[in-house]
Length: 224
DNA sequence: TGTTGATCATGC
DNA sequence: GCATGATCAACA
Image (cartoon, rainbow, N blue to C red; front, side, top):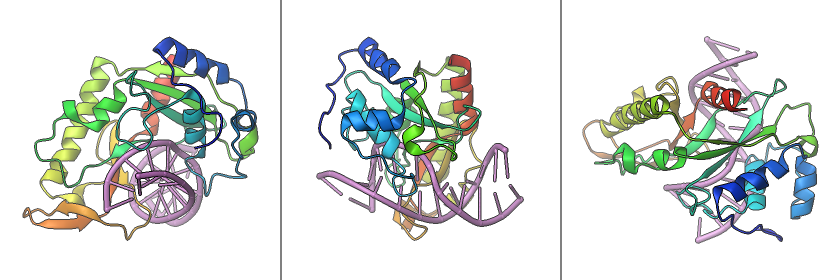
C-alpha cells in the first residue's frame, strides 16, 4: 500500500491501545505521518478514511472476506459522525452471496464472522469540516448482545430466504430490523449471477448487507 | 432530515 | 466480477 505500514497487533489490548492513541487526533495529522495524501473531499475517495485507519492499525485481511484482524477475529469499522457526534450513515458489512447461498447457514456466514467482534472507530464527517481537520473519536470494542445477535440472525435468514426463493423484486432496504440489503455496485447496470423464482440461472444488481444507522447509533451511544 | 437507492476507488 | 473500503445524492 504505502510506506510505514504498522505491525500486526498481537492481541486485543494492543490493538485497542493503538486505537485510543488515535483518539482526538485529526485525519490530516494521521495521514501525514503514514505518508498518505489527504484528499480535498471524499467524493472520489469514499473508502479513504477506512483504508487509512486499517493501515495505521496494522490490519491484515486485505480484500479477503474475513475480519480485518484475522488473528484476533476483529473487524474494523470506521463510522462517520454528524455535527451532533452521532453516526450519520449505515455501515457496510459484506457482499450478499447471490448465487451461492444454497445450504448457507448463519453460523458460517461472512456477516456473523464480521459482526462477532467489531472495533468501531468514530470519525467526524460533517461536511462543514475539511477532511484533514476531521478528528478521530474514542474506539469502542463491541460484540452483539444475545438479543442483538438473535435479531441479526433473523434479519439475515429473512433476506437469504428471499434470495434463495428468487424473490429479488421484493428484496429492498425496508426489510430487516438491524440488517438491511441495498445495492452494492459501480452502477445501476452492474450484474451478478443469481437465480430467478423458477430456479433458472439469472442476473441481477449486486447487493450488500448494511447495518442501519439507528443500530450503530445505539451501539456507540451506549458504549461511548 | 432520515432513508433508500446509486455510485466511487482499488486490487486481483 | 467480486471482494475490500464506504459516501453521495435524490426524494419522501
